[in-house]
Length: 105
Image (cartoon, rainbow, N blue to C red; front, side):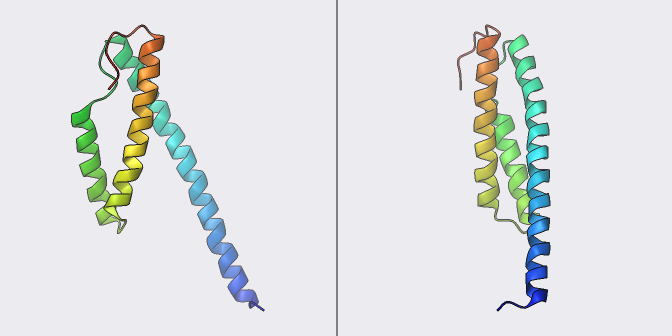
């Protein structure tokens, strides 16, 4: 039988994890709110949905942040690449809705 203090520690860690997960979801929602505005601006000025130079800069920046935070930089890069692909998909959809003429990335 697991001791009471072990169960309490486990419960406490799980509560923290749940709180962090909720914060991550809210932060991602805010990030996508901002990137939607970027997509609208790009569509308005007929700019391409993707910005490879910006993406490269962001990946390098996130890898440095991950390393400083003792998080695997490869994992951080994979996560950011996933987010970037989703943002570009949203920007392509916004451009299509607004009659953009640029080709998808």
